[in-house]
Length: 436
Ligand SMILES: *[C@@H]1O[C@H](CO)[C@@H](O)[C@H](O)[C@H]1NC(C)=O
Ligand SMILES: [Fe+2]
Image (cartoon, rainbow, N blue to C red):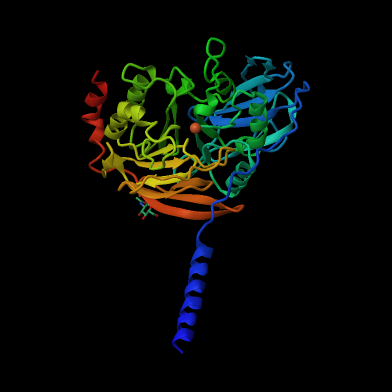
């Protein structure tokens, strides 16, 4: 009798154990790198079309023609096939060892109406593309995914982004994983074209964009030629750091791999940019860079410390709300934090370098989990930030569960605007930022 009861307990116990196991998420291995036919046969047909915000009410259209006789103009209008406006732009190209790039065109169109669909054509050639300009005010939604690469997981992430109803894509570095093999920039451009030609993609650079060869090739040459961002429009001297404003949000895009010390161009520009922020116009301040400052994964641990030491105090003084980083191939969200400790006036830090590249996931975490870490998981996925008004934003992270996007973390984030953390009328901040 007793042994029967014991057996029953063991059977029930093991059933409970397996059902617990079944609900636990099993993280998938990396997927294969995609192979694309690459056909450099000269053509004036536009390819690799992507768009980016280019100052108030303007959009930059970027594309490549493998034939260098392609023209840099864009025809556009608000109904299909009916282009009542035209804008002329510029082009560039580069050489990289034995590789010759196509003609890379950049053309700014506008002024455009907010929240409006435009139809456009590049260099007088079909096909017709369409884009949607972001809204003038809240609500505004950002899709965020970093460290994308070109694998089976990348397509899964891109498919989920297609389902997401977002206005602007934010990418905190590591785009193509070309890693010196230049035609991979071209295949990446074509892979993301369906998304990047219809909504603005605002990117900053990661280590995989560097591609420098000492004495032969400057860092970021290919990235800068292809992914031109609105740096001049935001008073910056370099494509590696800039800012933009959209629908009540001031977004600052920093460079983790360019000088950031007190005497650097980037540091001086950041101070000047923070002084321009008007929290009445843009209640939200977002910051993006590649190497995370708060991350409890063992991968790349401490790599962001120097930049954090140099710049965190400026962003704290200005009351930055959320900082996004990539680099670590996992997801992590912190509580508000500053100077290594929880701080109600600090920023929420989100590491979202889990777009799906070929290097796979970063599984090893530090124990015990730091107090500031609110959620961490090594899975591929993407994030969505829906800013509903001047004080409330809904952040969600969607894990690529097999190929389904499963919402795995969700939290309301309230902005620092109106709190004692933000100096009224920039009082004190001005003196602080103007200090040499
Ligand atoms: C902002 O949105 C939140 C969440 O929907 C709501 O609770 C709050 O009242 C809103 N605030 C304003 C000023 O509309
Ligand atoms: Fe990286």
